[in-house]
Amino acid sequence: MVRKICVVITARPSYPRVRSVLKAIQASSALELQLVVAASALLERYGNTERTIVDEGFTIDRRVYMVVEGENLVTSAKSTGIGLSELATVFDDLGPDIVITIADRFETMATAIASSYLNIPLAHIQGGEVTGSIDEKVRHAITKLADLHFVASTKAYERVIALGENEERVFVTGCPSIDIVQQALAESYSPTAIFDQYTGVGSRFQLSEGYIVVVQHPVTTEYFESRRHIEETLHAVKEVGAPTLWFWPNVDAGSDGTSAGIRSFRENHDLKHIHFFKNMSPEDFIRILDGSECIVGNSSVGIRECAYLGVPAVNIGNRQLGRDRGSNVRDVGYSREDISDAIRLCREQGRCAKDLLYGGGGAGNRITEILASTPLTVEKRLPY
Image (cartoon, one colour):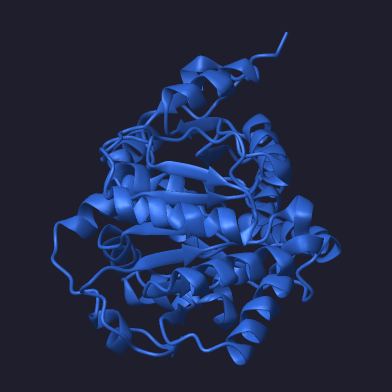
């Protein structure tokens, strides 16, 4: 009998993390894909991931609007509650055999709880990683709710086992995002095409002499400092003066401060070397990264995809605290001086060695094979 696999995508970064899995499920005769798009993935101001998903040939079975305006701790909790209520109805209606959730965003908690209380087996991608802040708590809580674990590395596998999960249900598949990297690098791309292909804000400039990429999100445990943090990075990037492609933050607590800081700085400074974007296709984003001199900010893409690419990463602050990282990462604090110095060093030193810390590709196919073949009756091992 064909198994119905329901994948829930709640934010811009979740889609590339799971897209190769979606394609592999679509191609499988043993599985039927059910796709639910929710939360900020539906919102224009956060890049409208929904449009990208549809443009790339996927059918969305349900849309769940659940984001409470405000981007603070209270609205994050309320959005999770709304998502729990709405997703319970969606799962009851669709009747999936397995639900898939990704990583550690606050919205994924709603997916995990709704699935668990409906006795639907839950599969978790990217469990067992350490990141600090509320994200790590969410990730480990989902691990305890999940029945199947698709982890990216051996260290992640060991952490999931240490949490008491049955080792027969924990699979080292590598990270599906590396599948996107491999696909993106198989085709050539001119970075200057980005200005014509995607709507952004700011001047156009030459990229042939080198450029940097900036992706910085608020830190939920430091959300009240989000505006100051982004202003320090803006000052640093302005002072360095390199051509810069800057991407909009996620919908986390503090993102209103981050966004306001960017808008105010843009209005009060001459930023002819910076162009701001909301979103683009996963492949194009990877190609832009691959052509850059370094990535600056605190996105996990600097730790994960850029390790595979060998692109230097200036990792700012505590958002990725504790995450396993390769030699491409240079950790700095929030001061503009530290950030600008690190950018200069990365540009001077050039590319790093390729690191397979998060796998070498093929994760989507491996995950799909396990989804099709693994028995669904799961008895969890107690952690004592």
